[in-house]
Length: 180
Image (cartoon, rainbow, N blue to C red; front, side, top):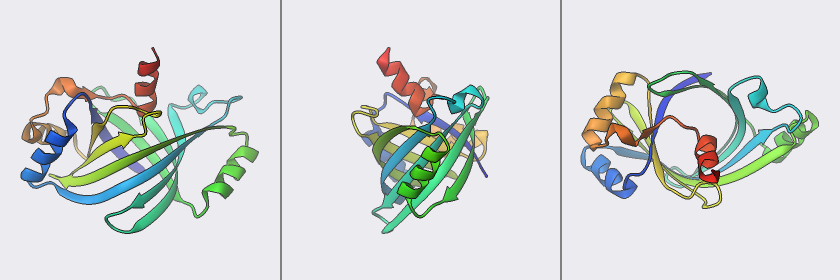
């Protein structure tokens, strides 16, 4: 089980922020292509009983020449300042077999999204630069993940990011906003 504290940074020039990050010492640790498969049940949606979602993520890291396949239950915890999540992760070796198993258990709703992600380490934070396929989410954004809330303000200040650019919304919530 892993605890996450994160925010998304929306409506900024992500290339400019990436240049600033590199200039202040951010270190690139991963350059990924991801396939994210969201899994749910039409008869008994996960959101009906827990603020969470189920995902299979295949990550191909071009920088480190690795491929990972992970099943995750990501559970949101209410927090007014940061998006706080508990992640339950398990490595799997076959997404097809896992999808078949989940279908047998009644998980019949599948949504696939692909994104490119660069991951940097900076000041005990991880900073993600995400670009989804246009059908999933058409705008690039930045995600900052910290272990302590105090680190977030330091990172935001060093990168010149204003507080009004912060969002606590999930990708699903951002997608729903676009539909309205």
